[in-house]
Length: 44
Image (cartoon, rainbow, N blue to C red; front, side):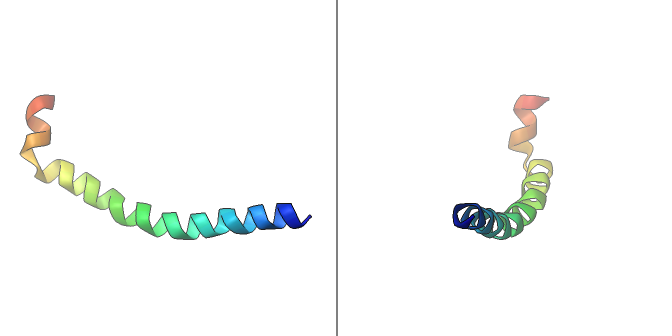
């Protein structure tokens, strides 16, 4: 039971730590891809 509880706590900690990072980086990646012509040049 303790191991399961610790695993759940670790999962919650990772979720709380990574969710704000991912949610903050996703718009930057999307905006960066749209704003950087260098990334569009090889694609187009």
